[in-house]
Image (cartoon, rainbow, N blue to C red; front, side, top):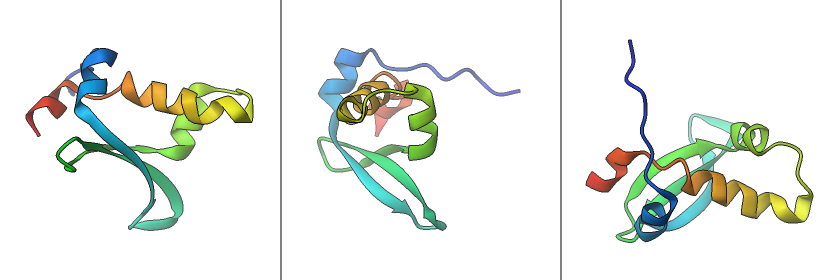
Length: 83
């Protein structure tokens, strides 16, 4: 049985996140991921790009990047504080 993941409030995530970088998955080069780094340039977590696109739904292309970034900021796990 897995424990439910709790997320940071968006405002706290904004304080923590230094960058969101699009990268190739080293295990599957056909898969794109977005890696989240903190302000100390340490890797915090990552998100699968295709899953993010599904999560934000069908939005206009010019709004997609902003919607994905907002989704990520709302889904930074609480344990990221300790990295």
